[in-house]
Amino acid sequence: MLTLPDVALATAERHAMLAPGETVLAMVSGGADSTAMLRLLASSELGALDVRVLHVNHLLRGEESDADAAFVEALCERLGVPCRVVCYDVSGYASAEGLNLEDAGRRVRYRFAEEELDAVAGAGEGRIAVAHTLDDNAETFLMRVVTGAGAGGLAGIPPVRGRIVRPLLDARRADVVAYLRGLEQEWREDITNADISRLRARVRHEVMPALEAVDPRFPATLGRSLALLAEEDSLLSAMADGFADAFAERLPEEVSLDLAQMRTLSRVMQRRVVRTALLRAFPDASRLEAAHTGALVDGLAFDAFARDLPFGLRAFVEYGRMIVSREPGALPPVAPALLDIPGTADLGPLGRIEAEETSPEKLSEDPSSAVIDAARLGGSLVVDAPREGDRMRPLGMTGTKKLSDLLSEAGVPRRQRPATPVVRNGEDVVWVAGVRLSEDYRVTASTVLAVRLSWRP
Image (cartoon, rainbow, N blue to C red; front, side, top):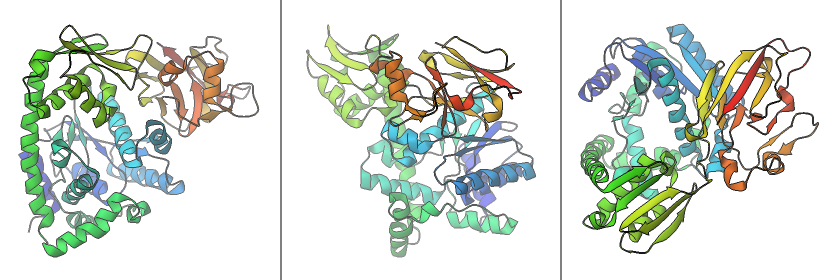
């Protein structure tokens, strides 16, 4: 009978996941799956690798979340693996972006992982290891059947996507638990995983057991079907890439599609090409809904068409081309970014936020710069956009105030407010860039070390 290391090694080799000596950033929550993956990577059973760990504390379960982070840090210290813990209010982010908690957490984790890996391995280098199993793949497929998805969504979880690799994807969860018990390795249990009011938990605890009662081989047979779907989806995606290369033109803050050429394609391929072209020109277009893409595909049939889209985008037909451009003055919302001290958070077209240690005496009156008390910081800072309901205690005030009111008083136009960077320390707002510093983080007479934050638009 194959052991977990056997299955994981075979998966890694079949998909060319890990090269000898490569930097691998393991996403470790402290649960059984990610703990087992870390033990495998750290033991060199998947090859001699430069292993590092990132743990994102979602701040969802109070002391339990803090205990998860402490567990991961302690395990990494015992294994001699460098570890970074980042605290981020995923619930607030989910509300601001109109996402469910699972989707919001996934987006935040992967964004932070990409940034961390760029910092330690170089831009585009290294791998991000995620501990999805065969059970996760089956559950994800069933969830998407319930909620609706296209062929790409129903293809399941890919073993490799860009820098992301999943060495446990062919392993059952029971194999993971057996491996950990053999090592006498503990793990953390998230009690929310048993809450069947959540779709994934209900699928895991009710639907999957019912299907396995019909056929115990269900996860494995479904896994083979998903692999076939993934191959076909990959072919369609490659075709869409080729058509986007041929039929689309890009300019700064604009992409255009040749109507005559696009009309030669089937509606299925039109939808894929439109989405591919948009994502190339506007990364924030990943958050456009299927209805928006569908409206653009409908518009390809007309010689006169116009449609407003989120994020300051507008589509219209002109001289035989469908043009999607960013409206003048409109900027994309700030996407979550890590900010080390010292370090820089790259905000793309919105510039960058820089952090550097400085003397408490070197205060700043420049609104694009602020000096804060380093002793108040608990770890990595995060930069993102203002959220509905955000409050802070502005410098010089005793009470709190809504960020929306501060931005209004500062004369920031409503359309530009999502593009105003907000520096956060866990759940606290530290600085609204160019607007106001928090009273809670100001430099005082007892401050020994300060940090200067600067926004370079």
